[in-house]
Every structure is written in structure tokens, then in C-alpha cells.
Length: 224
Image (cartoon, rainbow, N blue to C red; front, side, top):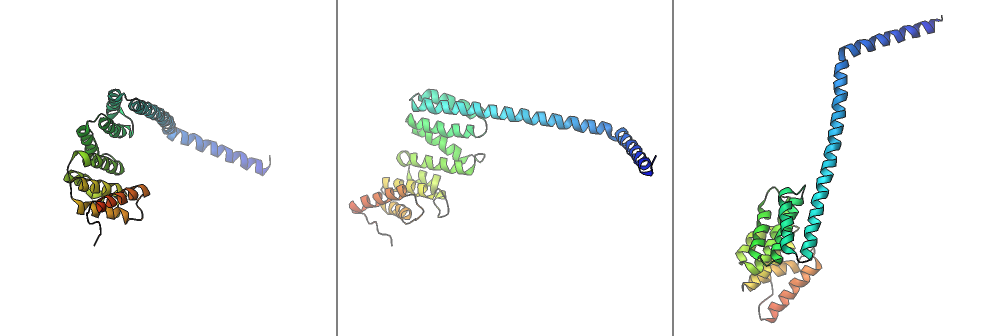
């Protein structure tokens, strides 16, 4: 036997002995770790399947509610949405609350719709962007079904120059001021929209129309 063969056999024996020693000391832990990995993988896959299943179910119910609403079946749509408010998966419970408020407005239950939008706008568990949209929706309804102070309470906080919802907030405030006979305040809000280069063209055009109407009625629309 050559020296190389001898040393190779000795090395293999030593490695075999080390592996046996390691297995004797840590074998049960290695088996336990392997079982944990298998169980964790199975649990993750199970949760992933359950999550997709719940999201699909909620999505189907939400689409059903929209279809019923579009077909004029408002009470039925509201029933489905109320179910989603309780059992909706992910964000579907909040979407159901928003849609339910819209359905109430379609039913001409404006007080109920406003209360729903205001409730979402105050819910700190709801993402801020959705809360702000809900505030604006409430404000537009309050233009015809509330006071200027009611509208201001909802959206004046959104009317600042750095707020992405400022255009809609200013429009609601301007419309409410105009409707309540406070024309100087209405001019102020509509002028802010017209002077904002980032204002959407449709919102700016409506503000320009309102300023023209007030000017035609003899109100001073010049900003000092």
C-alpha cells in the first residue's frame, strides 16, 4: 500500500469517527430542526392558500355589491357590504364602508351617508389617504346638506398648499361658502384653485366658471 493510500484511508476513518461523534451529540437537535423547517414551510403554504382564498371571497362579494348597486338593487347591495364590513379580508372592510356610504347617498339617505364618511375619516386604523378621501366625500355632501362650518370641519385641514387633496378641499369650501352667501370667502377659495398650477384642469375650469358667475352677479372677484 502506498503512503498516499494509507494516509487517505486514515483521513477517511478520522472523518467517519468525527461524523459519528457529531451525530451522537447533536443528532436529535438536527432532526428537530429539520422537523421545524418542514412544519414552518407547511404552515406558510397553508396560510398563503388561506389568505388568497379569503381575499378572493371578499373580492367576489365586493364585486357583487357593486353589480347590485349599479342595477339599482340598493338594499341588497347594502346587505352584502354590511357583511363585508364585518368579515371582509384585508382592506375590503374599509372599502365596504366607503361603498356603503355611497349607496346610502344613492338612496338619498344623505345624513346616513355623511355619518359613514365622517366615521371612516375619524378612524385612525384606516390608512390616512383613505381617511382624507372620506373627509372630502363627506364635505361634498355637506355642501348641500350642512353648513359651511360643517364642511370646514371636514376639509379645511386638507386645504394647505402641500396637501395632495387641497384642490377638492378648496372646491368644497368654495361651493359651501357660495351656497351660504359668503361670496368673498367663495372668491378666496376659487381663486386659490385658479392660481394653483398643479390644480387638475377640470377643477380649475369649474372654479373659473364659479368666479365668472359671481362676477356676472355683481360680486367683486378681484383678489387684492
